Length: 281
Length: 142
Image 1 (cartoon, one colour):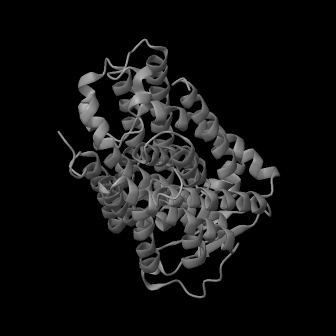
Image 2 (cartoon, helix red, strand yellow):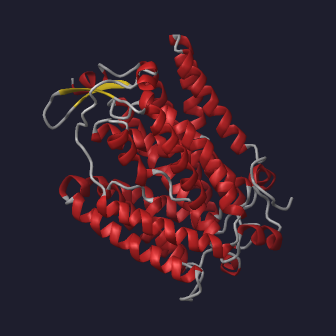
Image 3 (tube, helix red, strand yellow):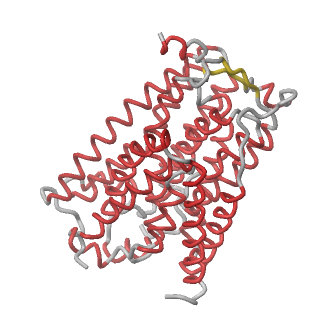
């Protein structure tokens, strides 16, 4: 196939990923890396760095309006973002040092696990936080926002900030190592563990993804693992796709889309695992 | 009216961060699109010719660097007349967007007297700049 066909195909795959990722409530990178890693002739080093770049681009583009509307809360998101950021650097360094086959196997395994988590994941619109936790209270992690659908002012507070930060250290490590960003894990941790309302968790999670992605991307840039011919069409495709995805979110059925995404991840994870184990070419 | 309602409970430092992020992102994407157009149109040829990239993109990053003798990290700034390096510079701009936001946040929190969050924001700047320094890359050839 002529060389120029690949960047064009990559643009359209990224566009599609952007459209699906928004209503599915997962970061685009978790879908992009397994699909492109399985179907395109690029080494995983370059695909992982591009995964982080599209996570970074889509999150920094989406963040400003969410922060202005107080949906993304910096007091909630900054401590986990700092931890995720530090550990994403470590993950990226280890990921780049691993032999290709080990990376392929561990990548397949982690994508399978995330696919299963997506099938099982639930969320809570307004979690019950009986009393603000010690660290969360000290850091003043609480807020309020205007719920557009009802016009109500929603006041909320968080708890378990220490456990949340610890969990985000692990998520950051995985995000940097496999280039999949943190979008897949934000809602379970911020909403179910730390008690932020669902919409606040989604919006604040986008902030966390942008910060964790930035640190890890620099490790890949410093290691020469970013190829413009792969990165550029992917970033542009994702940016346009995410805008369309926001409109799909308003009309589509997020639960059904989420199930399709989980199915794709299971297939891509299996393919990566069998490739790594030498069962399939 | 709606915007006034939305902003009523928003802390001022959030507005500062959002504004910085918005502008920095727009500028970075403009740089990326401009350099990308120059690269893909052939006006700025790459250090590695774009039509030969398919020979190399299946290699591990380390092997690619050794084979093509491509610059990595900030060294691309020495080759800004080359399309691939110019696009990488655009990507670097994008990767500095959050740093700009956090520098603003550090000052905003400090002015407000919120020392814990000012320190956290400053620490975040240090972490990203450390990652950007090129020191944290593992064992790569120079």
